Structures are given as structure tokens and as C-alpha cells.
Length: 215
Image 1: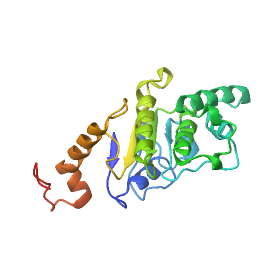
Image 2: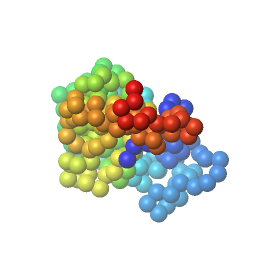
Image 3: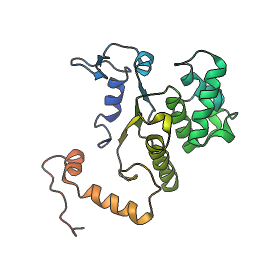
């Protein structure tokens, strides 16, 4: 599922409210049968809701492995167990060759991989991805799309993990899994911009969506 909208629509704010970084003025947030408003972010994470951030927030001076271990420690305080779980997540996202690299020395796409690895190491039931494709070039977007699909579809011990993706562009296709071909990406983009609900979400209900063939 994707939560879409232009800048300022409230996508990241929604994630902040769900994960305890902001507290709503009223209302409630229920997750798996439990009210989570008022809980600390780490308690919400322990309840099974993990997230990434629109701007990657690794511990810059720490290695990739140490960063991901901070997530693994949520479920097991034994350092050896946490290290093994962290390495599983690092291998899954394709960062094994960089596990001894300081997080601040990673490229943008690798910092996105690190964010996902750290979140996956908490063994979430719901994974919230905030602008996971922001700042990436087309090739990196394809990699990110493949990684999201792999997270949901390909890992047996994460078969119960669901993803929610906040995005403000149609750069990635709305599916999970295989690497898209260029012609597929053009088709997906066309479907997105011609969808009346998407037009309404971005531009308002008074704007008429383009008719087929209209430039």
C-alpha cells in the first residue's frame, strides 16, 4: 500500500503520529488491537511497527553492523544473537561487503539499504517506508523497488511483514517484486497521472483529470 500526496500533504506527519514521534491532539491509533497513542517510539516498535525516515538517520560514526545491531537488540539483548540477526538483515539488503564501513561513508542508496536493514532487524509486523526513493536516480529507484518487493515477497521469516510506503512521486511502479522494464515504468507513470483519484489528491477536487490522449 502506498500513501501518496504532494509535499506538505501530511504523509510523514502521519507516520510520525503512528510511530509515536508526534502525539495527536485527539483521536486514537490502534495497532493489532492495542491503543498506541502515548507510547514511546521504541515501545511502538516493540509492538511490531518499524519505520524508515525520509532523511536517513544512521549513527554516522558507527559501522553498518553496529547500526543494524541496535535494531536487533530490541528483540534479544544477547550480543551474539543480535549480531547474527543483524548480519542476516544486512545480507538480505545487499550490504554484507560494507558491514564494517562507517554509516556516514555510505552512498545514498546504501544508506536506504541500511535504514531498511535496521528496521527489519527489529522483526516488524508492519514496516513503514518514508520516501524510500527520495534522492535516488532512476537506476537506484529500480533497486529500491526491487528491495521493497523482496522484503515482502521473498524472505520466508518475514512473510508476515507488511509494508506501507509514503511517496510524493510516481517514480516507482505500484507493485511488489520484479525489476521493471523502462516501458513498464512509462506505463505505470501514465496510469498514475491519469488516475482521477491521484489528480484529486495532488491538485484538488476542482481539477479535471486529463482525458486519454490529452497532452
